[in-house]
Image (cartoon, rainbow, N blue to C red):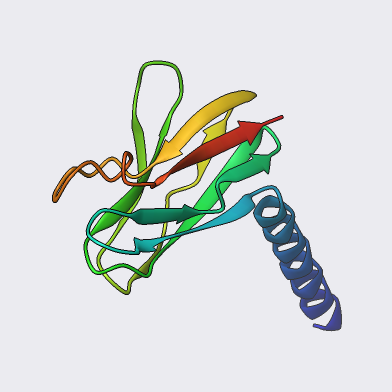
Length: 125
């Protein structure tokens, strides 16, 4: 009986350590967005650097309207997360290859959010 319990505990420890190893492979990035005025909005930080691989984004919306974070690898937009005012949300985990990506809010309600200051760079190297 003692051997069975010890074997079960050992198996649980192996599974837990494997889960932790997988979670550690995911880089986490927080992007904060908001509104300064009707004509000016922000996205911070303006430049983010990560290593190639899995990345999870957290979007914090401190604004008064809906915002999102979008990246543009080559010619295709990839919308990562959308948040209502005051909301914080996580994106799905994405796999990113080396390169420079435009990072911005793609919404255009009330004017083009990207042109109002909600733009930056994501560098994967």
